[in-house]
Length: 235
Image (cartoon, rainbow, N blue to C red; front, side, top):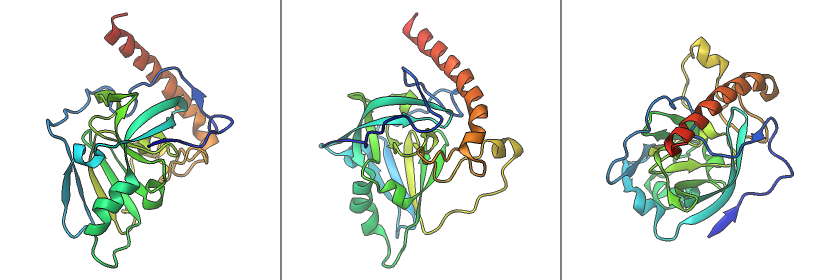
């Protein structure tokens, strides 16, 4: 099945299109994590017992194809990416819902990656039709730069919510309590919804106000990403 996210007349507010898809994030100075020979995803949290499922089994033999844009909170966007994988809603209905005790009300989902990154999403956001657990990009298996072996893809949310290298998914009956962040973390505090069309870039500040800070970060990190890409291609 092939789906395309609803076309819009322009990019989301504060975004600018670029012509390549860089490896981006807080850990770009480190190599991607090592992927196990037989990768799995563990489901836990409010389940009656944890479930461990092979990535190949999750995706299955009839993957869904999604054409969508990708928007980084730093202000760049890549358009027309082609992802393949399984709808998160399908995984939830097939594996998670039957493992809940009667009467359990799931409100949030904690997604973790092999690289130590994580994001807590509202369940309703992940049950949207265009949210995938993707194992392929552009017709090829995901590589280390873009989230091998499995990546959460939600085009409606900024890239930091699209967790790479997915290895664990916990369903929760409430939003977890966050500790007091350090000063540096408060300056770039993530928004809990991260919706791109509402420009939810920051947890407390309006998106338009925080744009200049992210623009500086974008300029520096994209320049570094271009240098790495040129070096790897031998140019």
